[in-house]
Length: 77
Image (tube, rainbow, N blue to C red; front, side, top):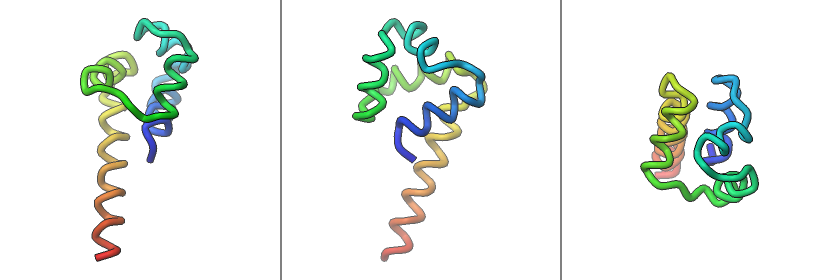
């Protein structure tokens, strides 16, 4: 999963729009969209998104993504 997919899924589960998430993070929707497209977030920003969507949703999707990447690497070895 990409960072964009992780955040989108977490927002859907938390019933929050990306626009609302951006506003709560103190950025515009276009700034958030640019960051989602590049996938460049600091640990603090991941933690903030996690706090905003609640229930460890971002971490849950992030962990799933890391497990999928790990599995893919093991498959190719």
